Every structure is written in structure tokens, then in C-alpha cells.
Length: 151
Image 1 (cartoon, rainbow, N blue to C red):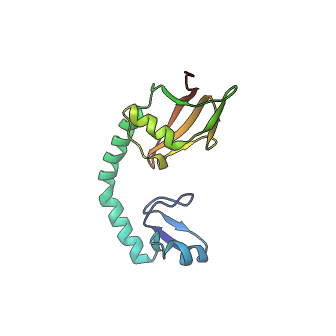
Image 2: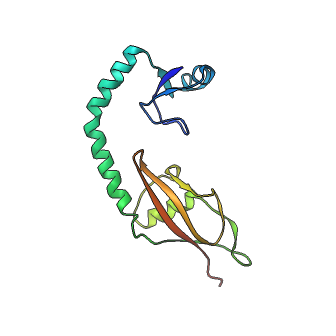
Image 3: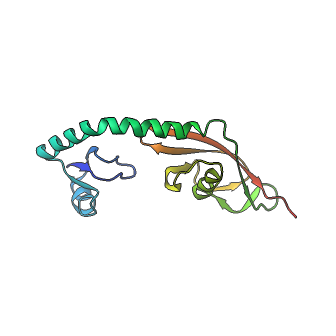
């Protein structure tokens, strides 16, 4: 079943992509939830015209996203967390903590666009995260998780 996505769907595609999915997934989930519409020939023509008109605006968005991504170059990010014996943390550090630290550093990005390698971090050390500013602009960010100074 061919569908045109109306919203970004994780592990499937981005808005206005034409995707092929199994019938049940499209009929029972994507279409009723408003994530997709059937890719008929007329819908494809409308999509092609829309994409043509949107190409210029899209380029401006990519340029803006690239400028934001360039702010991450050379940015040294340190996230402090309470730690127990050795390098083990109380709790964990995740994408929300990285988003909060980036906000303090002057780069505003939603936590859902940040993916930390390995999910939750439970030890101090240096880690890497991928930050998606736009579907074509994905930046890599290295940050340190350090233990909070004991008083």
C-alpha cells in the first residue's frame, strides 16, 4: 500500500514522503491517526506541485539549521550529576538533560530531536549524541558527564 505521509513517523519517513507499508499498518494505524493519506495519482500530482513550491522555503530552513548546527562545533558541554562510588551515577543522564545543558549554552533544541548513544547514561565519562536540526542536518555532539562536587 502506497501512502503519502502527513507527519514525520519514526523509523518510516518524513512529512510528504511516499512510502510503501503493509495494508494493515496503513489502514488501521497511519490513516486513522492522520499520519498519512492514500497515494492516488491525483494526490501524487498535488504533492509534486506542493514540493516544487516549497523547495525555496526548504533551502532557507536548511541554511538556518546549518547555522544552528555550526554553534555545536567546539562547544564543550559538561553535565553534572550526583555520583556514588567510582563512576556510577545516582539515576541517569538522558536526552532531556542534554537538551537542558544545550539551552544553557545558547542552543535551543527540543529533547525529542536529541538521541544519546546507548539511551540512558549511568556512568561518568565522555559520550556522544546526535542532534537533528532538520531532516538533512544532523550534528554530532560530544559531552562529558562529571560527578557533582561533594560538599
